[in-house]
Amino acid sequence: MAPKVSRIGILTGGGDCPGLNAVIRVVTKAAITRLGIEVVGIEDGFLGLIRNRMRPLGMDDVSNILTVGGTILGTTNKADPARFAVGKDAEGRLVFEDVTPRVLEHIADRRLDGIVCIGGDGTMSGAAGLIQRGVPCVGVPKTIDNDLMATELTFGFTTAVQTATECIDRIHSTASSHHRVMLVELMGRNAGWLTLHAGLAGGADVILIPELPYDLEAICQACAERTRRSKRFTLIAVAEGAAPKGGKQVVNKVVHDSPDPVRLGGVSVLLSEQIAEKTDLETRATILGHVVRGGTPSAFDRVLATRFGFRAIELIAEGQWNRMVALQNGRITDAPIESVAHQQRTVSPDDDLIAMARAVGTCMGDAV
Image (cartoon, rainbow, N blue to C red; front, side, top):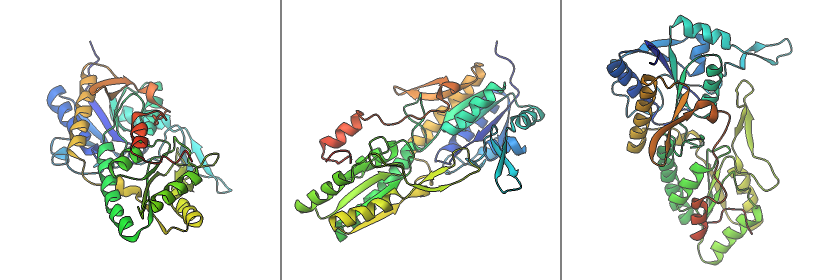
């Protein structure tokens, strides 16, 4: 028989995305109504565990939040208990410490029997660290990048694709009217799922993803060829993590107190300048950035997030801790959190979507 659970914590870690509140809602309501256990909301992800910022969640606290974007608990991607910035030394350099013992004290003080961790690869890596210190966890996969291992889909992704596609559609009409090469830069770091899906849905003529290093000459030829065919504009969807063959990703800035300090961004601006110089075509770059993260979740993501959250409660009821809810072959399942941590699911070069893109004449930037 599974040990008695009286109180659980719930946190949202990493970047925000549509659907987080749907999970908070179902986890809280199902925990109270089905299991009769208390729920404690942990504010700002793992930072709430470090700073002991938590509050009870009741039925009224999570009512009317299903359609709301973001997270009512707040979040941060700069709080790793195993390596947390606690100040600066005499020379102004950040000093990091493992504050996990402090986290364990706060968990004990709040009498939490386990934690539901909602997040992406960074959050699952943080949960894996807690598991190793004896804290039971259940993971719920979210990310607009869709790059978590063990699940074919994360909630937040389809809403982000829809938002990005609508933006590409609007830029499409401007590109056509002004006869320009228009580049649209999307988030994605090392995984091109968002750019690939939105690029295909938006009819992009060129799609550049991190998994396929691009050849500038190939991109310029694609633009020039469209001009020769009287297609007087080119639409390029580019992931922020795209990089040239033999080159490096474009770094926007480095956030030194973050577990993942490198912030990418600006590859579209660089490419815009290079394409204009080589082709004499008028070019413009638009970086969508955090626009794609925001807004109300789609109906699909509301349902998927609710399914994931409900399965998390079922795992707790069954005593199956330390597992992440997942979607495989269209069915809700689960996998060990530690098997998911410190990894990213990227697009395979032989993925069906890439073959499909090439079949309709889309340039993937990797061939002259």
